[in-house]
Length: 193
Image 1 (spheres, helix red, strand yellow):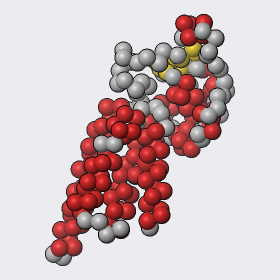
Image 2: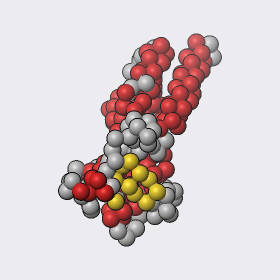
Image 3: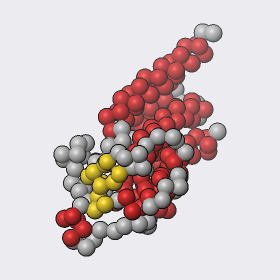
Image 4: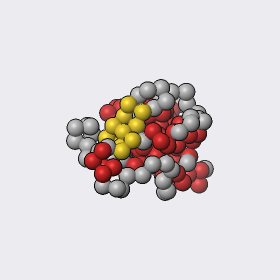
């Protein structure tokens, strides 16, 4: 096999190594509801939400409350959007909303995919983000290889992807950003292929 086998092994090493790093990074953010990293540091004390199976989630901004409601709405849960309860102090400002809110309800792909998974809406949403991020990583490395880039360039591309700010901040948190990063790379891969 010689050089070709060495290149293939190196490419597999890149994929495995950066996949493990990505899962570790995403694991720290898995199903988190706040950008700051802990509920104690969260400043988005706008809504609470209770999943269909009784899981209580707090420190939600409108984005997350809408996405989780959409997951359950796609599953056919009655009153899914009424589950987002505003904190009393926020409700007193008159700025709280109930029910579907644009533009969040126009972002249908990730909540719909999450609705297909037989688990709590928060975990389903985070799992969809993780799968899309991993798929994006693998397809990025493949696209770089197809474009004739060296294994070093493939490794640099994988590192830049894995440690990109949207991946570090939002990976599997309950926003669409992590999954969108993966979806964009999937689109790039489709163009290269």
